[in-house]
Picture 1 (spheres, one colour):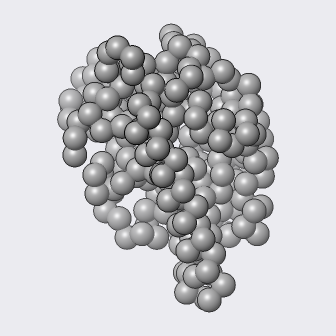
Picture 2: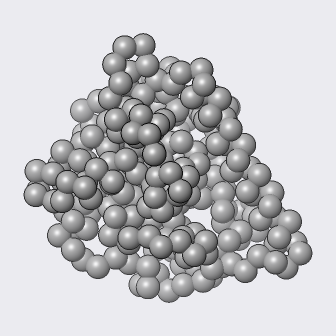
Length: 258
């Protein structure tokens, strides 16, 4: 993996014309390609489901929870301190959807690293943020803040860097598990599942219902500022918001009859 690949922390630290998470022309094309790749995956799932070839993943939510390590507790404490209730529920759903999708794909992922990356992945839009989305890429600024916080708590540097990359990468729309690891892949998959319903056909309706009951969706669009935030032009969030017409689906899971 190139450390300068789009979405990584090192990439986010570039200086000059493409600093603060602004994309080059080729990177914009790569982002659009990633979004198209997601749509192709959805089409494939639709056909497999209609043919009876798609077996949705089912699990008790307790089976998905990570062990209560110091790293997990420190991350959850930070999220509770900084996130509005709707944003915290979104972060939980991102983890649970990501974990279920990981099971469906047979991926070997680290529940601790996945949980920490998911529960903090939107730290850059928390109410007490130092930087604002119109000033820089919020995924990068949030990842930098999370890394600084967790490092100050004495956590392993390699783990902290993996968490930071997974957080910063999640706005790539699709993140390769081969290039960036299962955890980074599943943070992105969990987030787009919750916001747009991508991948939900792979999940059993009963499991989705349980997730939504424990972590209700009300207020998520406002909490994410999807229709209200002004993002720095040229960043991933600005490009994706423009391509979606500035609107998020109110009930994305209904799209698939779940």
